[in-house]
Length: 86
Image 1 (cartoon, helix red, strand yellow):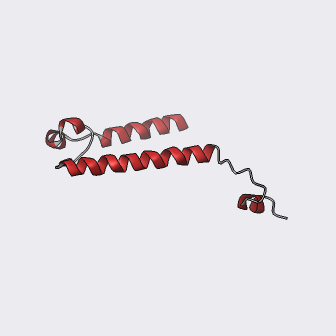
Image 2 (cartoon, helix red, strand yellow):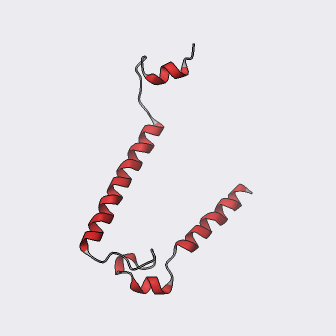
Image 3 (cartoon, one colour):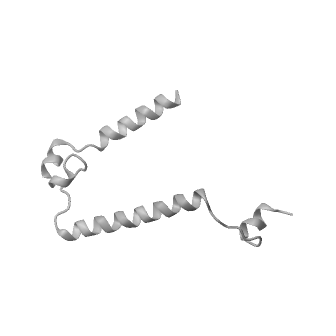
């Protein structure tokens, strides 16, 4: 039941995220069918988009990395005080 609900949810998100015909016509070739609106109008818009994308990917990488393997091995780390509540 959960698999079916998630599948339907993801399919709905995919359908709603596709651009409508008017927006698709107004988009540059790189973004056709992906997003709504007029799209980037100058080269500065592309620089802002790629800079933001790089920052988000950098943050995502380190968030997942430190979530999986935090690496605190010190015995006097703050988490030891909290976990060893005496």
